[in-house]
Amino acid sequence: MRETFLVFGSPLIGEAEIAEVVDSLRSGWVGTGPKVQRFETMLSEYVGVPYCRCLSSCTAALILSMRLLGVGPGDEVLVPAMTFVASANAVEHTGATPVLIDSVPGTGLIDFAAAEAAITSRTRAIMPVHLAGRPVDMDRLATLRDQRGLVVIEDAAHAIGAEWRSRKIGAFGNLTAFSFYVTKNISTIEGGALVTEDPEIAAQVERLALHGLSLGAWQRFSDVGFRHYEVVNPGFKFNMTDVQAALGLHQLPRLDDWIELRREQWERYDELLAGLPLETPPPPEPGTKHARHLYQVLLDPDARVERDELLSALSERNIGTGVHYRGVHLHPFYRDKYGLRPEDFPVANAISERTVSLPLSPKVTESDQHDVVSALRELLR
Ligand SMILES: *Cc1c(COP(=O)(O)O)cnc(C)c1O
Image (tube, rainbow, N blue to C red):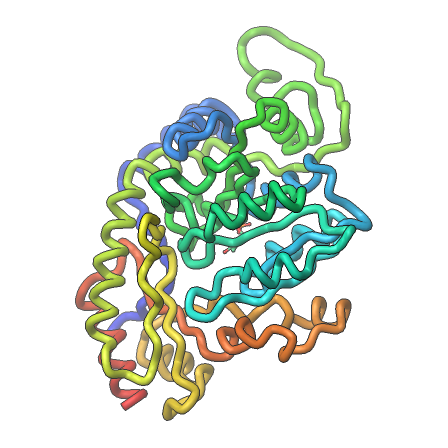
């Protein structure tokens, strides 16, 4: 058995990040300032989109997006059932109704045919999730958007670095939200970003993220002289700090290499797991780049142990795993408020009961992977 616990999703933080954080602390400028601006520029160049605004989280980006697009009470928003609850929660906070959509088998991505069938006269928006880092079908999404007049807010929390036909996710003309939470492909500990082609949206995001003030913190406190601010809209407190951006400035340049490492780990798992009573994830679709955020296996229904027993047994063997996810429809708030039944979401439900995410990250070594697989062999054979 392993001697140390293999933490699921622990970020790789190098000396460059540490030095940059210390530099911020010593500089005296620790709030929103020049490093946030630099990180925004770096992100927009990386994604290939004109504007990026960094925020305190991806959840904040989702909430602001819907605000700015005028989604609110009386509106319906199509959201996959198989996602992190933050996607649906963000819709609830605007006063709109999240309409949960089942997954397609295999990839677990939103079922666009089911989404189309769920459109009513009240449907305003769709929030696709690039689950595990696998891009949804962007052609199908664009058709749905253009033919049915929906606005699109992409939850790309898993998908920084993913591509569809050589274009990065985030560069398809939709508002797109990224997450830099601890476990994501790059991390600022807490943090997120919203990218857009629209300069007016970008300006409004900046204002709404900081109380609705007419001047950002950087403009108010820089050395150009004192200026008064005015509030034109009651905003939120969703800004990112320079201490967070300090990490991002050194994480983003390593992202592509890290995705490549994740791809190697993915293929190693595919080989090592052959013959066990579980399904490995489908390969990426041709013409796409998968961001390899999660390596999710589906336990066979007739395996010797139940999924939750397996999670505990792995944990006893010092192996941390994840469950992505128990569907939104199973959580008491959504289940009770909207009267949702598991059988209404057969695919998302099966994933909820059978999925296990194995450790996959630039911190995971080949030897860690062997530990994971030998524990699985012992428990499943
Ligand atoms: C992590 C995650 C979020 C929320 O990101 P935060 O930055 O923690 O707010 C939203 N959606 C999905 C699919 C996620 O995995």
